[in-house]
Image (cartoon, rainbow, N blue to C red; front, side):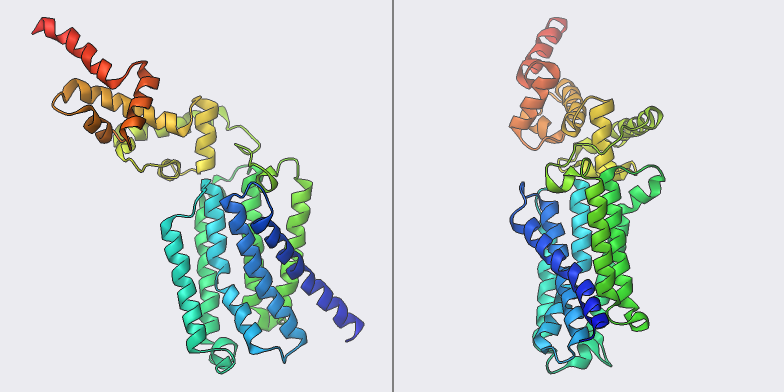
Amino acid sequence: MEVSQQLLFFFSALGAFNGLVLSIYLLFFLRPGRLSNRLLGLLLLALSIRIGKSVFFHFDRTLAAEYLQFGLTACFFIGPLLWAYLKASRDGLERIPRSWWFGFVTLAVIILGVGYWRPYAQYPAFWNGETNLIGYGIYNVWSLGILASAYVLWPIFRKGEKWSVIELWWVNVFAGNLIVHLAFRFGAYAGYIAGALSFSLVFYLLILWFVLQRRQAGFLVKERPKYGDRKIEATEAEDLLQRCQTLMETKQLYLDRGFKLVDLAKAVDSTPHQISQLLNDNAGQSFAAFINAYRVKHAQRSILTEDHLTLEAIGEESGFGSKSAFYSAFKEETGTTPARYRKQLLTVTRPQE
């Protein structure tokens, strides 16, 4: 192998190797083991496998078909994993929703089933040849994942203001993935190794950015800072808080027991990160306290007007998921229990009857 080819192999394989090492660290050694870091590790693993396959195939066209199929199979998950990482990180998810499990299991069944039905060794044209039906499907799934990821980040793109460090990190991860995807998509025009070289370049640019921002980028290597790196401007905060309050009062979204921070953020065209910061910095409340305050007020009205209902029924009707949650929030807001509150109302009203 000539020196130029050796250098090309070195630089194209460097990103894949280091991506693999970092993915193993994120998956098995980084503490605390948060969901977003695990998903980032899986994303890097899928990318590294795909890139590694490209590098070795570029320099050895006799590479076994099993390795080629393995690399393309990993590529099938890159787009969905990018979307899952960005959404879990943006929304602060700590567990994988059931729908996600169903989606990823479905994808695994599809690609493994296709691989068993049309293995690369016997049907190379279907995977990466003249027909290219399987390869075409794999890259389309990657494209759809990128589009879904853009939708997740759309509120950030739409802000048109200074992004926080973590928001900038999400945008960089998305942009890097898009660059690698385009390099593979149009690799026929720039050489098959273009995707691998793009990944190496993007990987080290992201690492360099992370090192330069290490004082503020603790969201990756330790507990994520509660709120980015800036306070919301007073006028912006006042307007956003007013929108949240108006929405609660007119739509009564708090009556939905499954109402979450991400739902409120979506309703006011913001991000969960920004709404959490808004409530803590400008309202002095957590999201749970903010929602429970409305639920308690609703319960107070119901206790006054719906005397035929049990307190437990009133709590459920007001949006509380359990009797204990209702009693705890009610006492924290009013200083008394629902039962004592109802008793006090009866004491006041009886002399007038």
